[in-house]
Structures are given as structure tokens and as C-alpha cells.
Length: 212
Image (cartoon, rainbow, N blue to C red; front, side, top):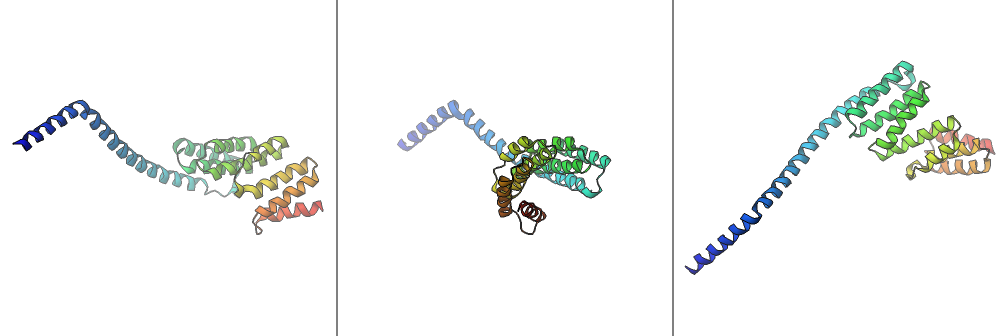
């Protein structure tokens, strides 16, 4: 009987605790369950979005850049903007912007190209795409002789994997500024980070050789 009384007391204590805290505990359990369920649903949705984005991106890049004219470049730009609007949470939005910029540059629409690159620079989900956008923005700035701007843009790139091309462009900036000694140093640094089999390595070596 003593055991029954003790058991009853524990039950009464539990009921009192439940009346006071039960709703909160239930809510927390439900929130946790919903959070997990919501995360699972979000993951499923993201996977679906990523698949659709991949398909749209593959369609976008199916046109070789060598075949791009002004009309095709504008269509590619429009399609890239649609990918950015519909699939901004996926990596393909940044990649699409980068491809559109190259198409627009091929069609001699540098201003529109830079607009796409600046979107990629701020919105792309992949750091590498952001760095590539910065590299190409710097290239456009060099083309229009905005050398200080180009140098500033290059200074934002902190990934050592881009040191080769970064220093190659820095060499071009210094050459345009008639700083030949500094340009040689930059080109030498560039060669250390570039693929010896790549075209940029060969071109940079030619520039260095020309400086004597």
C-alpha cells in the first residue's frame, strides 16, 4: 500500500508539472518535428530546383561563343536573367551570368557584360565564380583604360588559386602605366601560378620576353 501511495504521489506530481509545462513541451516537440519536416521538404524542393536550373544552364551554354552575334548575345543575357530570377539559390545562376557576360563581350557589348559580371560578383553562390567575375571585370576595366579601378578590383581577390591570372593582369596594368620593372616582376609571379601548358602562360612568357 505504501508503494501505491508513493506511486500516486509521483503521478500527481507529474500531472501538476504537465499542467504547468506540458503545452510548452508539446509545442517545442512539434516545432522540432516541423523544423525537421520543413528541412526535408526544403531539401527536396532545392534538389528539384537544382535539376531544373542545371537543365536551363545546359541549354544556355549550348551556343558556342564563337557563333554569338549581337542578337544571340541579347537572348543569352535574357535567358541568364531568367535563371537568376528563378534559380538564384543554385550555383547555376552565377555560372549563367558569367557565360552571358562572355557572350555579350563577344558581341562587343561591354557595358552589358559588366552588368552581368557585377551581379555574379555579389550574388553568385560559389566563391570561384565570384573571383572569376572579378577577374573579368578587371579585364574590362583594363580595356577601357580604367587602370586604377582594375587594380582595385584585382586586390579583392584573395584566393591563391587565382594568383597566376591576377598577376598576369597586374602586369598588364603596370605595363600600361609604363612601369616596366614592376610589370616584369608581376609577369614572373604570374608564370609561377599559371599552367605551363596553358595559353595564358605562353602569352605571359611572350610579354616577359619582350621586356628583355
